[in-house]
Image (cartoon, rainbow over all chains, first blue to last red; front, side):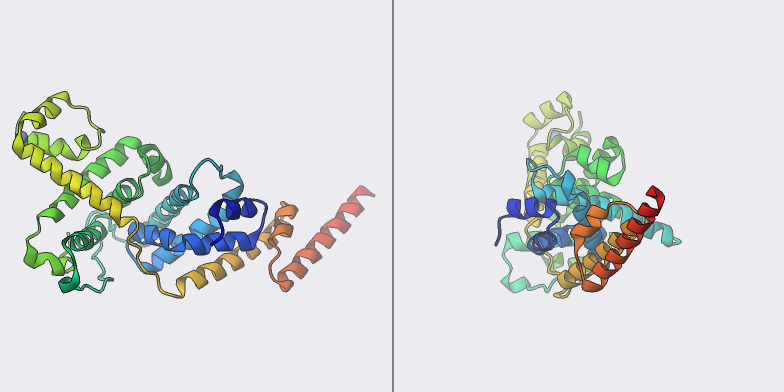
Amino acid sequence: MVDERELVEAAQRGDRPAFEELVRQTFSDTYTLAYRLTGNEEDARDVAQEAYLRAWKGIGKFRGDAQFSTWMYRITANAAATFTKKRKRQRTESIDDIGEPAESRYDYQPAAMSEAADLLDRLSVAVDELPPKLRQVVVLRDVYGLGHEAIAQELDITETAAKVRLHRARHKLREVLDLPGEQRSGASAHAV
Amino acid sequence: MLCEQVQELLPSLIDGDEHNVEALAHVETCLQCQAEAARYRKLLRAMTMLRTRYLAPNPSALAQTLAGLESELERSAVRAVLSGKRLAYAGAIGGTVATAATVAAFVARNRKRGLKLAG
Ligand SMILES: [Zn+2]
């Protein structure tokens, strides 16, 4: 695997194969974030593609002192926010307050799962089931470690709004830690 | 302060977003609220771990993304040439022979126009 910094520098000189290699190396990461932000595979693919397109166009502005992954997270967040707004306009009914039903995209193997892995699975489903506005903020802050300012900027909301959403999301997710054992494997069966 | 009020604040107290002295003092002396704070810490630790729990994309997703990227970049290269801007950018893109030919044709046409204007 070629060093990320070298690839970034080559891409900044207009070397497209180098950029494509960067896409290959970071795709799982970007796609996973896009999925967590949008909640479904098709949108995740569109957002990932848009994010890479913006990254190519803006790579000249990327400064080497920052992490490429963090820079990519911000671009992906912004692309997802634009995408969600567009989607919302296309739909007659807002999905923000009722939440989207979670899709079961894991192959659950309850018997083989350790308690920690089980917790992560339940948490993953619970994150999916959050209303999009809460989900985006808590994913960017608590999973990807972006600061409040960066989140507010990329989602085009105030920092106060970002904090309020974050705390509401944490409050909801905390309930996951309480679920009794017998409900665990069927966590995706009920919506919020 | 009541436990209930303090626990409402815990999601923001937990990472220092909220500096409520009264609430913090309560947590120091209340076992129930300490236990609740511990749950939030556990939640935050687990959330961090989700970052490397990659969701496997459809195997074709990467190929589709690369292909989509290529056609989008070539479209914007042609658009850039059409609008007479960022020729250097279009040149750097390279791309397929067809696109290169299209780009060359536009560049040639622009150049001729430029000469005409100059003369
Ligand atoms: Zn208490």
